[in-house]
Image (cartoon, rainbow, N blue to C red):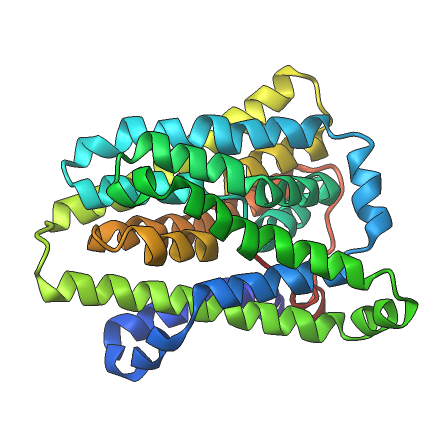
Length: 334
């Protein structure tokens, strides 16, 4: 029983939070004060501060698999969301699906789930860095081109500026601290603590999204049927799995190693919730139910990829050692 909780503690916390939102929403009203932009920037800063520069440079020497995953993340997922989201017949849900499909990869899922599956963590790490550092360009471009929303069309430059401030600037500041040997030692000494802080930030952001979803559905101001919600949940999983399968089979076709195949499939198909919420709050409030796909997609990828990672791990020649709770909280998310 203990290994079960050790491996899945974060997923269990997320599911428990979702249940709390459904059963006791009034007790979670304080999440409205959570600022996704501040939380996201802090997570990126902590990630960059604890990331060894030599590790980053090492992954850049063989960027091929990571670049393939970036192509899937920004070249396949957004147009797939645009093409498929309209079948539900609800503009808000369509906009939300395009939004979550256009944001960068999330570090928590990509790196940790790649490790669980026996994949190449360095490749997954490079994908998260590349997608986050180029999000100011690619995410903004897709939102302007695909949504047709007034906020995106009129303020494309502002979207790019927002992403630069939230993603690129904190990363640069975090890495700049590593020029000082004393600060490098501080980062190494407190890396588990920073990981805990980042995990707490992620849970807070997810709770905020879940509360917003429940409030909008309960208000009845925007009509949406149970069938549309179920269809949205299924579509989020389907879009994620389509990208996952493309990454896996494409990497196999290119004869990449099995660890790189796993890394490309997972990191190329996963998306980050905090950045999506930042953009929703800033530019897409006119589509109140657009927040639904954001929460559905993120929760769906956590659940589905947990089982996919375990399936891959079971098929490897060696049996991987399950990460401990300390290993997991040492990872910095976002």
